[in-house]
Amino acid sequence: MPKRSFFPAFLVLIVLSGLFIVLSKTGILSVPADLITKIVSPLQRATFNLSSGGNKESKLSLENKALISKLTQMQKLLAENSALRDQFETSVPKSQNLLPASIVSAPSFVPGVTPAEYLTIDKGSSDGVKIGSAVVFKDNLVGKVTQVSNSLSKVILVSNSSSTFPAKTISIKGERGIGALGVVSGLSGQDLILDKVLLSDTLQVGDYVVTKGDLQVDNTGYPPSLIVGKIISVEKKASELFQRAKVKSLLEFSKLTTVFVVLGYE
Image 1: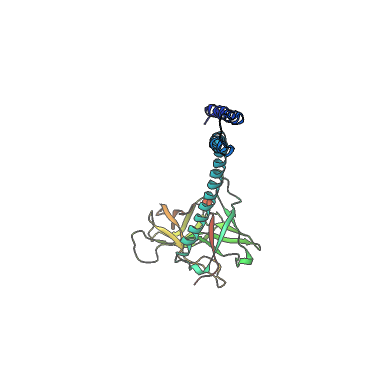
Image 2: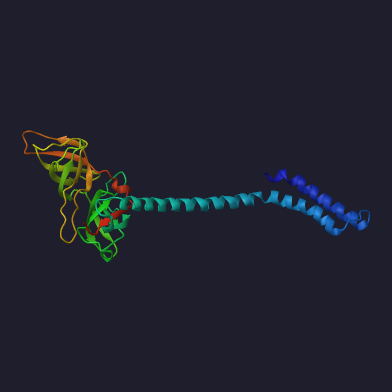
């Protein structure tokens, strides 16, 4: 409320206060002082409340900002807890062998310029992480640990051009069998290539590609049946020995905040 709107009330208060004081001193109005105070005080409080409205509004604005900050922090915690809950409800790989880790950086990633090729996570050798440990999110393959310090680890993404591993397909039609076998290589970004697939094998757009599994006795390597991605195109020529397919990961690596390191597998 503008200050000029309560100025007349303030002026009336001053006039009435002066009138009461003059009349009480002259004896014309025989009213006890405490009664005068009781009459005047409500007017004083009302005037003060009107004049301090701006301060209350400022205080409310600060409280709202603090509340928004707390809500933002709460939403972040809820997102992290949701990721943890979803991960531990996944049956592959076994949840009791997984170590949750936060992504602290993606050194090669520049939005709109270069895709993510590596991730740095906040878990290292002191947490049981080894070079070669698989990194997952839900039942999707993220990559493999290539460098470890005491408290940090470097993860190469499956889409990195230097990433390569055996894989197989799962038909969207639910056909039984091991599917087509091949070798997955990264193309950067979210794209990969499934190569070295025999011409006699069937590749279809929409089929899923999963890890064949190359676990070592020390629990390093990729567990079987982790989702690598979905086939988006097939290239097959009768004049060549093999066919190939372009595969896209179901994950947006640059948007991940939490991943899970496979410490063991049963």
